[in-house]
Length: 347
Image (cartoon, rainbow, N blue to C red):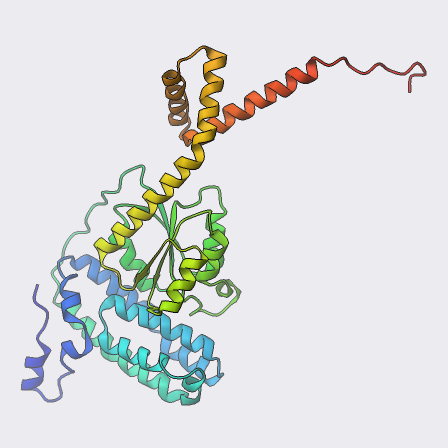
């Protein structure tokens, strides 16, 4: 649907707000207007999550806490990317481009600049949303056996957008801190893969001491991680890939590029898991053939049937078969030994 023409309004009224195209990335927003409910959800998440940022930024700058101030600017930059807020994004980038500590010396003026750009952005987005048609919420088409994706990002705006893009393909688990992500991965039902933001820490506290890069390093070799960040630095890309990231994407991602990258990562992870599982599956197949006089095809079919009945991976069932065989062998060895003779004095 066409977006409001603020340029025409300004021509008629010199006190009218700035033209939308100076505040928002209209070509990007045009790609979202075909899904009005989704666009409303993203804008609502942006408005709610960005409201306290100027106050928190002013507090960080007043305390000369440059790291926290930059974390807040990174979060706001990513949220601005997600809603197509070009003027706000440029404001954040200008402050981030200053030398470390410079934003702190700017103090209240930097926070006021961000607050003004944010106010302008929210007013422009409100005009866009007001012109959207009403539409029913689409039903989920997610398959019952969908893989689980953990989204690690401290931006509610981006998490809302990713929900809209990926909810039909994945079971989604969300975490806004590195500690929360690691706890989810260590649980009884870990995710199949992770989508990780590197720039965490916009909210102060011990939970945000674990960065996205720390999560990737700790999970290296255990779970596949795809980076999703605003950081375009080649050095950061190299660091993330060396830490164990499987792919590196920039915010906001094109939906098809995001889906294709996640699908390719999941397929690669499954191929690696199958290759690692094959020796134990082959061993379990041989045990079933020997113990139950089955052909190789029948033994492999039995493993798959057991796995399906128990809703477990074939490798898990194969490991149980091998463990049971080893236990039986140890038991037979012990049973075949002569028990020790008690001493004559009864000691």
